[in-house]
Image (cartoon, rainbow, N blue to C red; front, side):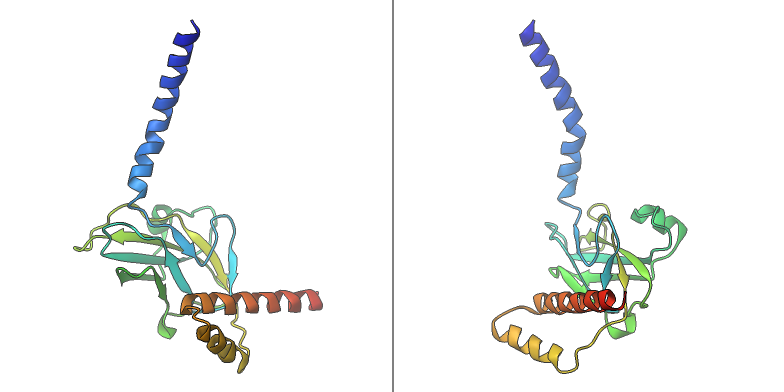
Length: 186
């Protein structure tokens, strides 16, 4: 009897896991939005031209980025947002790039909340899989350290640190300074 019970439980769990296995197989075609933003809460970005980064999808020739202004936190899937509003920006990024920075002409409005998605495309521009989960963020007024920012960037570059990492370090420093300023005034 115990053996039949064990077999039944095993079959039951296998049947329960099949949908997850299918999603995992499809998951190889869905890029993961990495930065900026968070899955669970809106994070502060101190630049109006942030750098977006995502994971690699095998056989992707390019990636499509869609950025929406986030007015209602309830509609956070790409499909829900696209059904009710247009993206503020949609851009195809040639592969094998896994990051992209907005130009000054594409800059985002300080004080606004955004959510972004990425999708892998084949050589013909057809989607390879679904849109990624969204990452939400809020653009705040950029803080500039006159002279310090450039010098710190030069020093980090001399140690072999890449541009994306330098940008992230500078954003982290700006974030810490803003938090200290907020604590001192609050």
